[in-house]
Length: 436
Ligand SMILES: [Zn+2]
Image (cartoon, rainbow, N blue to C red):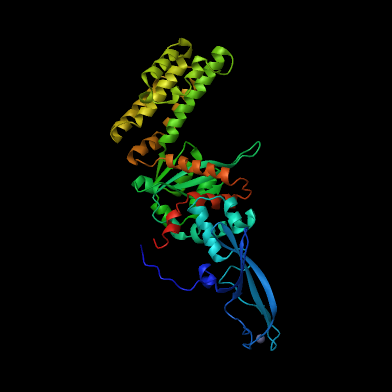
């Protein structure tokens, strides 16, 4: 146990008011809150215009939410003296900028405390605002602004980024039309094997233009350093990357490639279901029962599951599904090859097969073949740049989705972006170890 050195109990020091240029003069402690009455330490009684000493003309009270102690919110009632300079008639108040920003409702300490609670402890704004005895809106706006200033606006945030992922995300479900953002991920730590990816930025909308102008808005140094852009099948992102990052390699992400294949299987199954039975799949029907097994890799199926799949697919009426499923399995197996060379060979073999032998009536497989053939180079590029998958992007999407649960009702996209960045922008360590 370390040696404790005791000094006289002192509310000013205990509540950290000395750091704010305040001194405690009284306390009123109830079950609901602790109110500390304070004076401003610096007299501030010399006129800044003419240098004369001024005359006090009464006081005003400023209320500030402070960091909570224990389970109780702490509120400061700061008594601020007003002065009048008789020489030049100037009137002013004691300066409290050490304690809080002008017009702020939170002390600087409380801002730091709230930011830590949000970023490090992943607490909701609702629970933070209760501890600050402040409205949700005021708390949210204050903490996001502080996070923007201290973390998001930090220009070194973009240093060392070599691998980025770009994806789209629905940030708001609106009746009739969803609202999208383009999500940019820093996947460099994943590629280097040093840690998880982090959210780098978000931009409103999803289009070639959105991604292109985001890239344009970055420094030339940043654009020069990016080596790999991992993306989904959306052609717009590809075009933007080629234009703005001529030296970078575009990688079509395995996660999305496999998903394209899975979508083809599902669409084909649903089409045959309608064609053969005239209605959507129902519980207990053979095609419907294997719908999830079809999407698994054959290597992951138990013997029993595998038998079930093959029994159903042996039915001649489901021939189209069998062919699509086999192509899907071949597609999956590309990513399980032991070496990049073997993987590329396997990809070439699949492309050959898709080029030559798609019977009529396999429209889902045809679409899949078209997409992968068009993006064959980007699909193969993954094997030269392993671990540049947007899988991590999807994981971040999951965490952003989770935000919707704890922070319902983002009306402002700027707030939503700031909150998402604070949540998943990798700032945790920065707050925990500010010296790093
Ligand atoms: Zn004066």
